[in-house]
Image 1 (cartoon, rainbow, N blue to C red):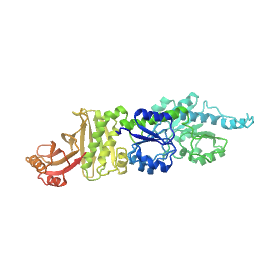
Image 2 (spheres, rainbow, N blue to C red):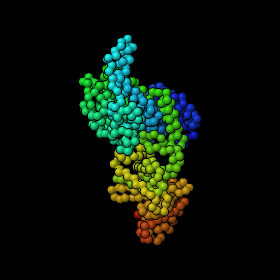
Image 3 (cartoon, rainbow, N blue to C red):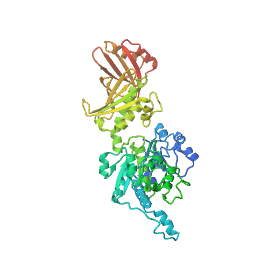
Length: 529
């Protein structure tokens, strides 16, 4: 992110406006659409960013070769052509441009619905053939009909707005749609089976996931109103195409309009040749305006990340605006160092992690802070962990993660406290960011103390008895270890105490062994940040 001249490969055909944006922002971009897999593998290691559409397949093999890669930007919505788990594991942010073609795709869905309602493609072909079959093509009005939306996000909500303008009744199935948002959109929120039973037209606007794959199946079609019409401008795998063909043949479905298919390019398909099927070759985003919009957006997003650390529309990382990136960066550093502090002191498995954000810290992008804390926590044991893949790795290891946000209660305007639970204990460490932008430790194991976090530190727990500090300091001096800062804290007089010592160089293992043998010492560990 700090490279003076980051390099970006444009691997698919994008509007020339994208190249202009990169150039204006000071990013070196090479447009090389149409590369073969071998050609891509040969050069991908030279680039910090990759801009694509749907043609380039970013596989795990490609990602392994992309040694410098920091960000992949998809000009469009779908990222089926990117191995997101592999990118996440490699610490590469994957972005898309979900809003650049929203209007275009929504309008295409409405156009397909109208074409389906009035048999326009078949009537067009018949008329061009010199026939005048006016009585053959008896359509239906949209006014007063019920449009059922499966998925009501950005595109689905635009379709709903346009459909209401056509005087249609609109209903939607979307588990994430709140009643308040449904009311704002002027539609009725339904469960899926009820939507099937009531809708005259059904339009799909949901991502393809394990849960939504073949959401339109033979069983679901059987629940639909007889004579319903189906529109799909979302993803091909949402629909069992063979089941749709059977339903068209039986009359259960009166028609279907598809812009996307299970296999693309769709040179052959069970639905082709059926007069009651309207088919277009994935044209949802194919307008001049949309192509320009997504090209501009992906160039801006990639440039923003490479130049300032701003994250927009990422699929594996919380979004951080450019202004927010500057504000949150010292807190991200603090969170990662708190995690690293706890991780270096933990030799057993971790069962749970709780992160408390108080005061001004609670108002920040805590998702990014949590990812940073997990990265620091896991890195001592797992060198391959990074800020992008840390939550995934924690989940795979069964670590429970919880966040708490609360208003300022103590003396500090804002702070972060990280607590980890192991089979044997709970360990907590807290820190804040002072006005100089540098992170500080303010509490370790519920013992208040203030310490700057330095590259090389010694952590020592001991009994609070007279003479310990003298013996400890003398040992370090005799070993030639220079002390830059010495910070002390204790739970109570004569009870447990902690010494955090900032040193100029790494402490040799032999010296650590001598420290551990000192009277009153319970634990001694060298820390690196």
